[in-house]
Image (cartoon, rainbow, N blue to C red):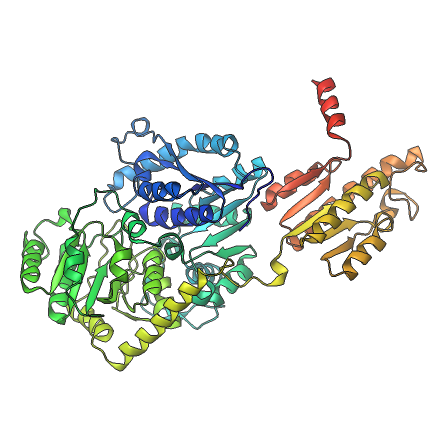
Amino acid sequence: MATLKENHELRAIFVPFLSTSHIIPLVDMARLFAMHGVDVTILTTSHNAKIFQKSIDLDFHRGRPIRTHPLKFPASDVGLPAGVEAINVDTPKDMIPKIYMGLAILQPEIENLFNQLNADFIVTDLFYPWTADAAAKLGIPRIMFHGASYLARSALHSVQHYQPHLKVESDSEKFVLPGLPHQLEMTPLQIPAWVRSPNDYTELMKTIMESEKRSYGSVFNSFYELEGDYYVHYKKVMGTKSWGLGPVSLWANHDASDKAARGQTKPESKEEGWLKWLNTKPENSVLYVSFGSMNKFPQSQLVEIAHALEGSGHDFIWVVRKNEEEGGGGGGGGGFLEEFEKRVRESGKGYLIWGWAPQLLILENTAIGGLVTHCGWNTVVESVNAGLPMATWPLFAEHFFNEKLVVDVLRIGVPVGAQEWRNWNEFGSEVVSREDIGNAIACLMDGGEEDAEMRRRAKKLSVEAKKAIEKLTLVPIPMDTKLKVIFLPFASTSHIIPIVDIARVLAMHGVDVTIIAPPVATSFFQSSVDGDSSLGRSIRTHVVKFPAAEVGLPDGVEIFNADTAPDMVAKIAKALQLLEKEIEKLFEQLQADCIVTDMFYPWTADTASRLGIPRLIFLGGSYLAHSAYHSVKT
């Protein structure tokens, strides 16, 4: 990462979505940028800022250029009580549309802040597709944050493109996901309902994918050794730039204060009971059970989990969210979990944590030997960091795709046997039995050969995760991914020569440069470009055929100069206009990161905006001349 020291620090604005599972990894990523000297501002609402403000305060006091800019959420304007600003497991269904309405009201304020805070680039959650257009309007890059894995996004692309789920006869029949690096099988019931039966969310996802193509690129909380095949595959099928900057939790949270503060909204207690309990247990003996911040089970499922844990014979920590709506139903009795907690506490076999848990601190404790997880991407990456095998229990979102990575590709997990995708705020119809849960736990924790192999592979990945954060470049970057800039000089010698010299300067500093020009214009600088190329600089000319005959010009009349006959001037201008579509296609085909075009090509500003890349304008005059012209004009 670079720091601009001569004029100002590189300034970035991060905008996380209003959901804990999206906020935490993007804030960790923002902190990573600040660690490398980028000046970072995080925009979010006051209530959501509480989730991470302790971490930002810690970093700020370490001298890092990072801060939060809190936004007042317009709760009363959309009929919400104060403090209801996030979409999480406790958000009532009828309030979710109102939260989206509040976000829509905030959009102009956020867009104004991009300008007022002089952002050099923005990093925004995928659920803010409008920020691609906002960035294009300001002429700055927008980078999209994906909270999922490369495999999950690749698998989703496969399903949407090939529609293999429509070619089987039943919802439980397996099909292969086409076009992926591995042969992965799923059933229709395991893919998202909005893919099987298009709805408003399907349209939102289309809008998100379109905005990604207009963005400068995307970032994932991933690293090459974790899913390198899918890192390469995703960039290929999407045709966009992307970077794996993970594991961000390992990057950003080095000491206990960081790990304890991460995602913490309640006051810290002086003594943590779970820690004292864990520290009495042997190495690799405790099972950690957690299903993330967006899930609640029905009482009937909680009962099955409790019996499976108690019957496993292994010590466990269970992060549980009680479902108050179920009351005493589901065969468990109103006080089932309370009685269960009392019983396992007394026996010393289990420890229940209600609500939020300091997951990073728990996973790194040597007593933890494995975990049961919903396959949320944050937890998968954090488990890999800790070198722990997993029992996989996917629920919603991209969880079933992530399970394929853990179980079939990395082979560091065993499935519990969940078969049905459900919406995050619904219970669904499936209840996994205590027997199936118990079998997965036994495979994970009983010390057999399969357990040992999973554990060995998980430990190896943990080593690779730690190596990833020791490198400045987090994923191998081939030489052809250096910054690519296209220069487009105007058809006049006095404009051609200086802009080509600027192009050559950039090539001297390692930028990959292509100059687009017709043959006659090329003749004025080709020998200089050839000389630079022979010195090993990445610079070349792309010659476009000038349409002289189409506009009634003789061959070789392609530029404006002292010898250009007055009646030919309009024809040259017409010919340049005919070249616009070809040049536009070249900007896209050559995968430009940036274009530098002469002031007489104003149409290139719209082209760059459509491609989601910056356009720099070349002015052939002096600052004084253009200032004086502005003075006269105004």
